[in-house]
Length: 120
Figure 1 (tube, rainbow, N blue to C red):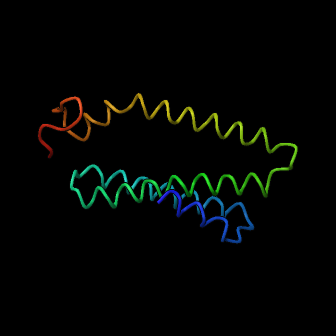
Figure 2: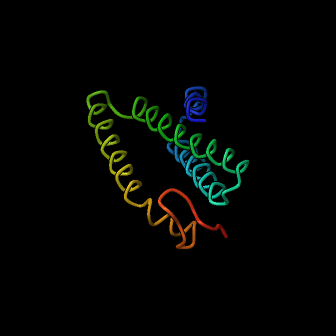
Figure 3: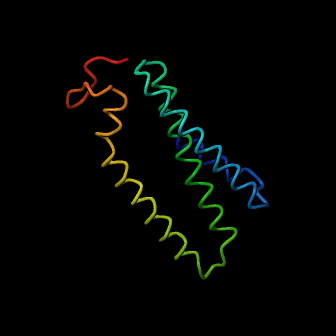
């Protein structure tokens, strides 16, 4: 999903900030729907959920890159990309430290190191 969705913004004529916001909102919804489908712990739903989560991730990155390339003046491109990468690194850190919290939420407090003992 990630690799495929990165092609979408390149093929779209996005002329307004509203269009960028709509694509980013759609990407966020894809990721959230994907994560929600994964929480059911059903193999087929997990495959679809993983695809959607990665689709949303690729769409966010490609849309943001297109925005910075087309909307930011050239002298601010490096600063824009640097700030974007910094925000992405913070997101990765927050995601890493929230694994235990999410596992407890999904497994209802009953889990081993790598899986739920029983799934609701």
